[in-house]
Length: 88
Image (cartoon, rainbow, N blue to C red):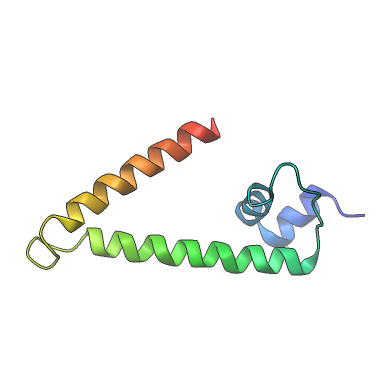
C-alpha cells in the first residue's frame, strides 16, 4: 500500500499528474514502477519537444522560414491557453 503523499515525494507532483492524465478514464489503472518510469520518459519527450519549439520560436527574424516562428508562437500560446482552460 502506497499513499499519494509518499509517491509525490518519490516522483514529484508533476509526474504523478502526468501519469494520471495519460490514462484513459475508462481503462483500469495499473500503478507500477514501470508505468511511472514510462510516464517519466514520455514527460521528458514532451518537455524536449516544447523546449525545441520555444528555441525555434525565439529565433531572430530572418533565421527561420518566412513567418514560421510567428505562427509557431501563436500556436504555442493558443494551445497553452486551451490546456489551462481545460484543466480548470
